[in-house]
Every structure is written in structure tokens, then in C-alpha cells.
Amino acid sequence: MRDSLRFYLGDELREIRDVDPTLTVLDWLRLSERRLGTKEGCAEGDCGACTVVVGRLTEDSQGGKSVRYEAVNACIRFLATLDGCQLLTVEHLKGPDGALHPVQRALVEHHGSQCGFCTPGFVMSLFALYLNEDRPDERRIDDALAGNLCRCTGYAPIVQAARAMHDLGDRTADRFNDRAATAARLKALADEEILSVGSGDRRFLAPATSAQLAELLLGHPDATIVAGSTDVGLWVTKFQRVLSIVLYTGRVTELRRVADTGDALEIGAGATYSEAAPAIAALYPDFGELIRRIGAEQVRNMGTIGGNIANGSPIGDTPPALIAAGAALRLRRGDATRTLPLEEFFLAYGKQDRRPDEFVEAVILPKPAPGARFRAYKIAKRFDQDISAVCGAFRLSLDESGNVAGIRIAFGGMAGVPKRAAGAEAALIGQPWSEASVHAAMAALKADFTPLSDWRASAGYRAEVAANLLLRFHVETTDPATETRLVGDRRLAHA
Image 1: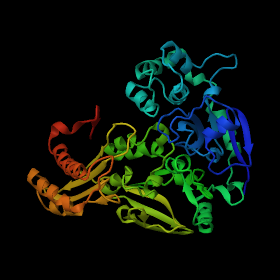
Image 2: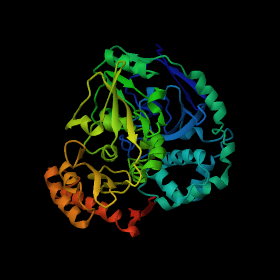
Image 3: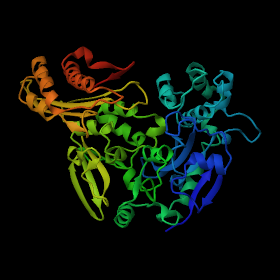
Image 4: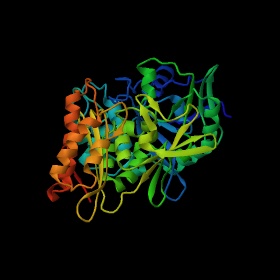
């Protein structure tokens, strides 16, 4: 067991032993390091003023190790999660001779800063984009900046700077893009020791293997399991909760793997949205689009598929799509595992079929059957970075006569748990896939859910939206003109 946190701050190796388990990266930077460029705006991962870039080791397609650079929110990320990583802040970008980085120069030349409070966060989001992608298009720029809020400059000059930053430097020669050298340094820090830092009864435990995680959870069934901390981080920053034992899954390589098993995709519970999205989108384009609208890029780089499920929120975005696709969940307790259909995991509001010493190990997402149609829809007040009022997902199979051979309909935001619409499904099975049949199912849908009213939507609105989404699904799967449809203001093509 190792009692020191080790990471690189730029090119400086830091080794820290006395670490509060829930000390955030932001507070450490500002209060301990006095690196004041990283700002606190919202303290909940929404505004992007605290954006930093983290480089971490990942497995490449050949099974080797490479470095992945990601923009993340420092305000909700715990410092100890940086073990084995490299942390870059806005202060690192200025060259040894004081010269501005190409990203900074582009913002200056295109007047991309006014009051300046949000600017360091924009710089770091663009810096991650600069390192990772060569001349991204405007849609990609918009995605990368969706998690950075600006109240005075306006986004047009910032987007112009993003287009111009590659003209002002060579990203392949950037001093922070020597990934082989960085990978070598980070590999030297990697080990299979359990990291244990903190003091007294308050500890941060970070196992390196699934077996270690299972053993630790047997000994600490009351521990708070943390993957991306996009939810738990708010418990600390907003609700001032004091967590005694934090059990971090981010060092467990097995939990981050996304593997094709032939007839299914096995998604490790620790795989982030960003890591899992490409493989999911290749099978289910609408699901990929749904993931793109979860939080912002900083959140998707931290939040995990397994965490979204284990959280048990009735408005989590991934469970309805996974349930509609027929996904199963693998749970582990010690050396024993069990698998159950995902919809059976959610029992009631705040209650799941999981023992205190059991954890979500993987999600098994079956590949779509030939001819199956799948759609997922997110209804929210904003297109980007908003919580769903209603999230609906549908999978349909027709027989040779055009009758419904199989259908799965799942909704989030309509009940205390993500749930299938059993009555609506029963009304459609064996019936022609026609408007009349769908209207009958829309009537049956009223008995499937008793939605609540809250500040996001009224019960009546939710019920009407859910029924209309079923009708929309019918229109999109019967009218060839809608096989390429608008998603908000963007076009998504379906195969």
C-alpha cells in the first residue's frame, strides 16, 4: 500500500502525503500553490472558469500506453484522483521567454477576452483541442466550448480565435505534445499498489485492480465510490458533506475498457462518456448523439457510464437508452459476479438492487439486430449542458408483414426510476406499425407513468411529451424523408 500521491504539475514531480480525501484540484491550486489563473465560478462543473488539462496514460489500439489530454473541471475533481497523471494549468502555457502560446495569441488577436474572468478556462479548453485535433470544424469547436460560459465577450471572437490558433503554431511541435516523453514519465509512476492517503478515519483509497476494489469494498461497505466525481463533487462543494472513506475507481484499468465481444459491447463501469461514446455511436448513432449532450466536454471527460447507472437518478440520460437497447449489468461482490437486465436494477427512487459491498463492474450492450430501428430523444430547456425533463428511447423490430415483432420503450424523468412502458409495448406487439396502432399505444402510455411536477416540467407536459415522442419515433421510422432528421439545429444521419 502506497501512502503518497504522485503526479506531475507541468514538468515538476509532486509527491504529497497529507491530502484531504475531498480536497479539490481548484482549491489546491489556488490556496496551496497560489496559481490564481484557475478561477472558481460555479463550483459545480457548469461554467468552465476552472478548466485545466489533465494528461493520463491510456491503452492504445496495439495494447501499449499513450497519453490522453483532456479538459476537466478542477472545481469538482478531487486532487488525489490525479495520481499518475500530469496536470497543466494556464500558467504553463507561457513560453520560457515569456512568449504567448498560439492559443493565447489567437485570443488576443481576435479580441476574445473582455473582463477576463472566464478567459483562462477558455484558453485551457482550446489548448486541449489544439493538442488533440488538427483544424477542427465549427461544430467541433462549439462542442469543445459548450462548457465554458462567457457573459461579456460573446462567443463569435472566441470561435474565430479557435479557427486561427493552428495558423499561429505547430501543434505537433508543441512542447507539451511530446507524448512519448510524457508517457515514459507517467509509466514510471504507475504501479499496482493501493493508494491510501488522508489522516485518521478519513481516507482516500485508490485500488489499481478490480480484485483490490472488491476486497476494499468488502472491508469498507459504507465507503463512497467515486469514479468521475461529477456528482459526488457537488456533495462536497454545494452540500458541504464530509466523506469519511472515498473509494476511487479511476486507477482500475479493467473498469475503463470498452471491448467488442462479438454480439455485444462490454463497457467497463469506469469508462468515461468520452471513452465509450465512439464505440456506442458506431452501433447506435442516436445514443452517441445523446451522450454528446450530457453535460459539457469537461464533464464527459470525467463522468462515467457506470456512475450514471449506479447513481440511480431517475433523470440520468444513459439508462433509458441502455434499457431500450436491452442492456444488462454485471455486478461484483468479492470474487462473485451476477448479471441482470438493467431495468431490474432500479427498484424505487433512490433504491437499486445492489448490496453495500457490491459494485457495478460492466454494462453489456447488445448489438442491434439486423433491421432493428433505434432512436433516443432528450427534451431539455437548453440544447447543450442541461438536465433532461424527459428522456425517451425506443427499439423496434418488424416482421415480414410489417407487424411489430418486438419493441422496447423506456423513459427517464417520468417516474422515480428509469422505466419501460409495459402497457404501451403490449398495445403494439403483433399490431401493424401504423399511426392507428401508435395512437392506441399513446393512450396506453398514460397508465404506465404518473409523472411528477417540478421546476423542469409539469406532470402534464411530461405525459404529453412522452406520448409525442412515441409518435415522432413512428414518423421517423416510416417516412423516408425523416431518415435524415434535424437534431436541434444540427443534422444527424441514420444508416
